[in-house]
Length: 332
Length: 254
Image 1 (spheres, rainbow over the protein chains, first blue to last red):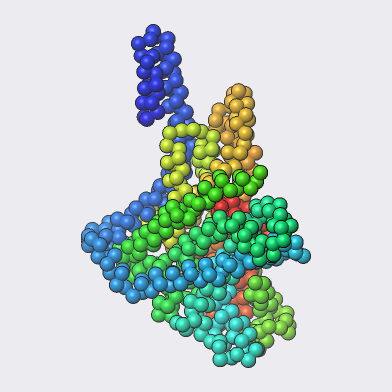
Image 2: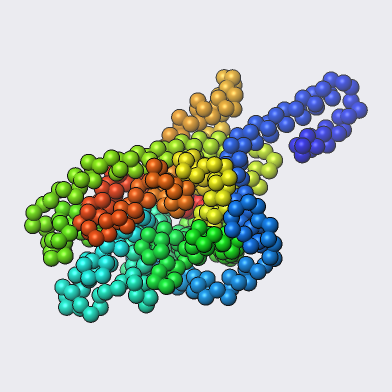
C-alpha cells in the first residue's frame, strides 16, 4: 500500500505525459509492489510463528492479569488491578523481588570479576589452555535439570560430598541442611549457579579479550606499564562492551531463574528460595489461580522491559558511540 | 570445576552402601551394575530418543524459518524493514518464563499438550530472534555481485537463496543449528508443562523423575546422571567451536 502511494507521487509529473510514459510508470509501480511482496513474503513464516507463540501469549497474559480466573473458559470475572495490588502485599512475592536483587548483586560482585580474572589468565600463553577452556565451559552445556540433581546429591545432608569434605577437615559442625536451612539455601544455590554459568561469562570475556589488538598491550609494556596498569588502563576499557553484555545477561537471567530452583528446592524451605518464576508456576499450575499468576508474569515482563530499555538507553548507547569513534581510531 | 563430575562418575560405580563409607576414594569393587541396568532398560533410551526428535525438529524448523527471514532482512531494501527487525530483536529481551503460562493455555486450546509439536513450535518461536540476528549478519557479508550474477543468469530471488546463499552460509547455519540443538536438549520448563504423560518425556524431565523415584539409592542416581550427561558432553566436544562462536556472536550482537 504505502509503496504504491510513494511510487505514484514520484511519477506524479508524468501524469500528463503520453500513454507510453504512463505505462512505464505503472510498470515501475507494479515492480515495486512485487519487490515488497517478495521481501515480506520471506518474513511470513517467521512472523506467524513469532506472533502466534511469543507475542500473542504475552498479550493474553496482560489481559488475563485483570481477572480472577482459574484458567478454564475465557476470563470473565474482571477485578481491575486487584491482582497487582495483592501481589505487592504478598510476602512471598516481595521476598522474590528481594532474592532477585540479591542474586543480581552477587553475580555482579562475585561471579563476573571472577570470570574476567579467569579469562585474563586463560588468555595468556598457558599450557593446556584449550583443555581448561573445555572444562570450564562444560557445565554450561549440561541442562539445569542435570546440574540441579547433581548438586542436590552433593549437598545432601550427611551423605553428600560437601558434608564429607567438611567432615574430612574437621568442620563437621558447618555442614548439614544446605538446601533445607532457610539461612543457607540462597548461598548454596548461588554456588550452584556460579558453577553452571561462570564458564559462559568467562567465554564471553575471552572473546572480548581476543578482539583487543596485541599492539596495544605491547605498546603499554614498552612504556613501562605494570601488569596491573596494563589491565586497568588498556584491557579493562576495551573489554567494557563485553562486560556490559555479560551484566545484561546476568540480570535478565536472575529475573527469570526457574529450572535450577525447581529441580533442587521447588522454592523451599518455606518459600526461602522462591523466585518470581517459581511463584508464578506455583500459582498458575498448582493452585490454578491463573489470573494472579498472569499478574506475576506481567510484573516480570515489566521489570525486564524497564531494565532492558534503561540499559540500552544509558549503558549500551555508549558502546555504539564507542564503536564508531575509539575502536576505529585505535584500529588504524 | 571437574570435581562434581568425576565424583558422579566414580559414585556410579559404587554401591550406595559404599558411597557413605567411602565417599572420595576409588570404588573398592568397580560395580558396573548401576550403569548397565539403566542402559538395559528401554526407558532411558526412549527419553534419549524423545529428546533427539524434539531437538532435531526444533532445529530444522527454527533454522529454515530464520534463514528465510534473515535473507529478506539482509538482501532486500523494503519499507518497514527496520521496524520489523526491531520487533524480532525485542524478543531477545524477554525470558521464556514470562510467556510460559499463557503459552500453556494456548497449547492446551490447540490440543498440543502431550504432543511433541507442543514443545517444538514454541521452542522454535523463541529461538527466532537470536537465529535471525546471527544469520542476518552473516548473509550481509556475502557480496552483492554474486546476487547480480545469479539474477543475470536467470535466478529468481528464492533460487538465489536456495542455490547460492544457503550453500555458502553452511558454517553460519552450522553455528545456529548447534545452538538450537543445545537449547532444545536442555529445555526443562516447557516439556515439564506440556508432557503430563511420560510417553514423551525428555531427558531433563527423566532425570528429575528418576531422582524422585530412587532418592534413597544414591549410586543409582549418580549413574543415571552420568549417562544423561554423556550425549550433551559428547555433542559439545564435537561442536565446541561452533557453539562458543555462536554464543559469543549472539551475545555481542544482541
